[in-house]
Image (cartoon, rainbow, N blue to C red; front, side, top):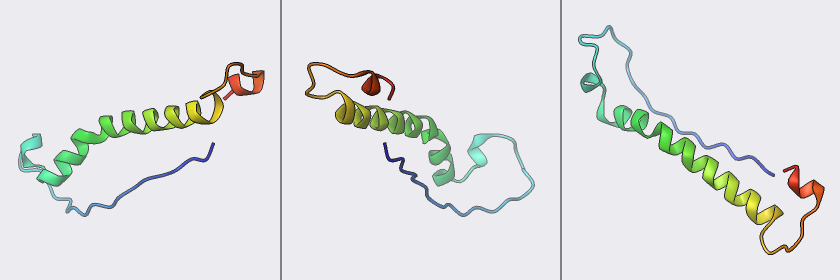
Length: 69
């Protein structure tokens, strides 16, 4: 199975905090932080679907090799 990496860059400036809550975080950075969990779940689901298609879909019997994936 071929692994794919996805990434993006986001610029931000590091300064001493005025307050210690999420409301002071820039909106785009806050959104990215909030979406990290769903991004991870999406990547796991995509990998599982790809493994299903490559190893099991359309087969009535599977080998030990297929089970090891």
